[in-house]
Image 1 (cartoon, rainbow, N blue to C red):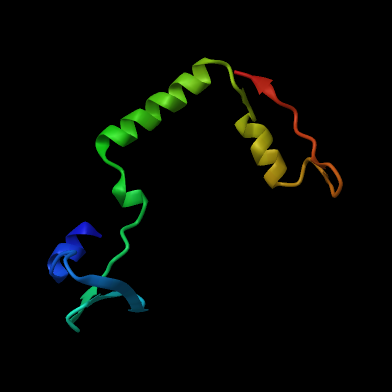
Image 2: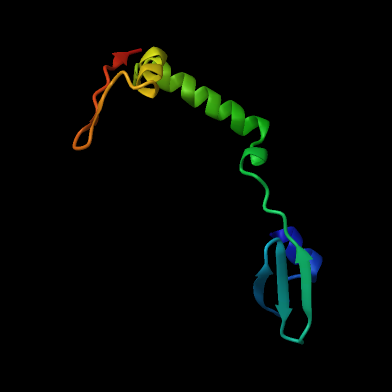
Length: 99
């Protein structure tokens, strides 16, 4: 957003930023100028840096190493194929295992 603001002319005299339509920003200035610029909302998936990915990988590794409860993959598949009947009040009863 900072880059778009700079491209529009900076924050000096900026009164408002409008969104007139999908993918479009309108910067309205006190002197009457209105600068419209295209806006592409980047995918969250594409915003991960290598350092962020590594930190998430390490956090998941630590979580698993600490022995957090997990649902075994074969049980997940059985749930998906209807092996564990759902109870409307209590949900699905799933056997858990410690990792």
